[in-house]
Amino acid sequence: MFFTSTLNGRRAARNYLSRVKERTVDRDKPPTPRLLLRQLKAIKAWGKQPAQDLARLRVPVLIVLGDSDVMVASELSRDMSQRLPQAQLVVYQDAGHGCVFQYHADFVSTALEFLA
Image (cartoon, rainbow, N blue to C red):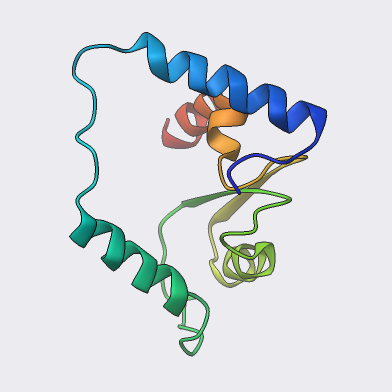
């Protein structure tokens, strides 16, 4: 789900888990069961609401996705990017929902440039 099952995706998953284990202090608190249920409810509802009028939003928006994301359909992110006047769409190849972790160096560079 977060990484593809390709050789590249499996390698990226191992590298990500190694990086996560490096951090031993100030780690995020684990999610509560209540939070997990709320997140699952939001995921289930995603894409089922009528399309919102995004054209009136006049702020830059960075939309990032993996081309093999099975958690959030790529079509929804692409559609959103077309309906936002100042959207910048970044699609990472051979990547799932964890694309920002798989391509962390490129993502950080892209995000910093976007925010500048």
